[in-house]
Structures are given as structure tokens and as C-alpha cells.
Length: 422
Image (cartoon, rainbow, N blue to C red; front, side, top):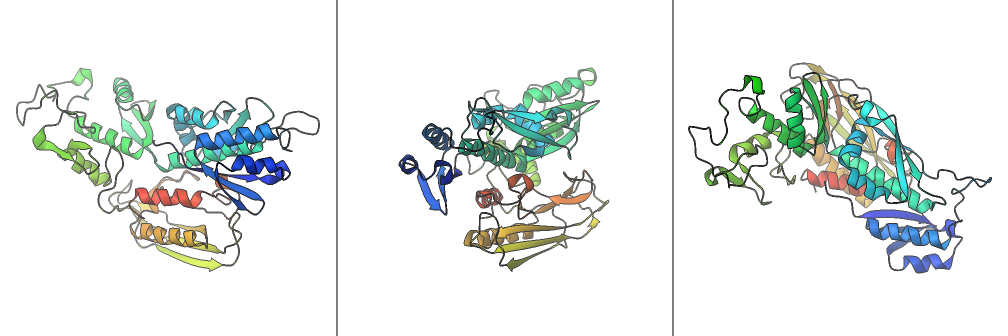
């Protein structure tokens, strides 16, 4: 997963009581004045360095650093997140998480995400603890917002699947797919990870059901390159297909525009899931989702503003998906599913209107909703959000799916671009 490099922080100059040194420090950075704040954009390293300079300038300026009795207090609000997603981040994204926290913070998660990994609706609370005080509130909020951005982008690409495997097979899968998080339960295991790697896992299981992935006790003639009696011979030195892990021959090899190569049959099967490169996610063709038919999307405008967009009105999006019977591509074809009504909000700015246009295109391509298990109620066979994030509240900030969230529009634009909508 590519790490986030383009970040924006808001610096309230009230913390520094109009200190002219602030302006000198901000000069080398890309910044602009907004009301009584400075909006500064840059990489993590640049903004981390900025926060340290501001802390050195006036380390005692923040009213949130210490209480009146001199004891250190916690300046950062905790974040409530999905236990499933947090378990994946802690165990598979430790490097990225440590880069966010740096040397200044550690996180505490309650309850332990590993204890709720199998419960999709469970949430855990992430608390940010400073390694030492005083802590610059700019730096603290920067770390918190960066964590939220990383969490949301990770969650948007995460999928969970369950496969029947033995204990030995479970260990083999862990070795073959280090990007996935596996949790064993009796004769099955749950795999959590990015879509591309879940697709690779499914392809591997499909191609090896009758061959090399059989249990040792039941193993018959193994369908390996050296054991085949028909078909083109494969040179062991040939490049391996990232999906089936077998060497590829020239006559059966297909290379995409992005320069990644696969067995032709493997790629055709993978494209049935999603027309993207299984390695890098590059889109090929028009992506169509599994959103049930018959729904409506309507937008209305009002003069009220959203936090962070006080100069603009509000666009309210009304979604309606009726109940119906599941089709091919849904978890349980032939069974009924429960419909939903959802409301989302955008600022009525030029960028907000552009995002609305893109969301309408995504809705028409059946990408906004799907049928599955609700992460909030835990109910199965219901219409749920897909992986394009919406703001369903006008207030409360990112952890409550609301505003203010200054980089939300750029994030959702990136999510749409991944699906070929731009």
C-alpha cells in the first residue's frame, strides 16, 4: 500500500499570540491564511519538522498541554474505529503506523482488536499517548488526523473472506500470502486484507483445489510442472504468474499496459472479479459493481454551511435502494435482501459540485452500494455502503463521518479515481 505523502494541517495562530516568529517559520512552507489560521500543505517529514519548530518557539503556549495544577493532560481525543480494520493495521501495517506516531507518541487500543477480529460490528477505541510532555497541540492533532486518514484509506480497500482449510493449509497460506491476516477457527479460516490480495487468494484456492493444495493424507498425483503429461512444457526459469504462482510460458503469457504479466487464464478469471491489474490495481475497462437495481439518487441544495466550509451552502444527497432478491454477484443469490435509505453531505463549492458529478457516475455504474453484512448493525443480507466514503453527518468530524474534515474531498476523489471515475 502506497503511504500517504500529501498532508494539510491547520495552525491556529492564537496559540502563539500573534508572535511574528511564526510567520518566519512558515515562510519556507506552502501555506495560506484562512481567517485566524494558517493552512500548511506538505509531506509528513516537512510538517513534522514544522511542528517541532513551533514547539521550540513557544513550548508552554498551549492551554491543553497542562492543567491548572501542573499535571500533564491528554491533548488528543481518542478515535473509535472498527476492530477488524484495527487488527489488520496493528499486525500488517506496523511500519506505516510507527511512521505516523514517530518518536513522540504511542497508541493504546481497548479492547484488544484481536479479541473482536471475528465480529464485524465491534469497535475499539484508539488513544494517543505522548511519550513526554509538554506536547504541541498542533503536532498532536496532526498525528491524530494523519492516523484517521490512513485508517480510512486502509478500510476502504479491506475485504474479509472465509475459506475451508486444514491446520497445515492455514500455515501454508500464511507463508504464501504475508499481506493477509488469517484467523483460524476449526476447519475454516478468515482472511482479511486488500482486495487485490484477497483476489489472489481466491484464485490460488480455485486452481489448487484438485492439485498441490490437497492435504498430505489425501494427496494423489500432484499437478506440478514436472508431473504434467500434456500441455506446453514450462521452463523452471520462466517468470512466475503472481496469481497461480506457476511459471509462465510465452504462448500463455499476457502483459498489461502497466507491464505486469500473468497467465492468460488466470487474468481472465481475475477480471471476472474486477477489471483491474491484480498486482498494482490499474483499471482496465469500465468498472461495474454489484449495487442492486432500482435505486435512486437525488441531490438538493440549502443555504446552511458545513463546518470548515462556512462560505458555502450544503448539498444533501438522498439515496434510496429498495428491498429485493439477490442476484449473481451477491453473497446469497435467490435470497431476499433489505433495502436502505441514506443521506450524505457535500459543501456546495466548485469542488463539492465536481465530486457530486463523479458520485452520480459511480451510482450509475452500481459502485456506491452492495449487498452484504452491515458493519454497524451486524445484520446480513442487507444493502451496505461499498468502499466510496460518504459524510453522513454534518458535524462530529472524521470519526463520526462528519465535518470538519478538510481533506475529505481529495480523499473521495482519489477513491473514485481508483475506479476509473475522474
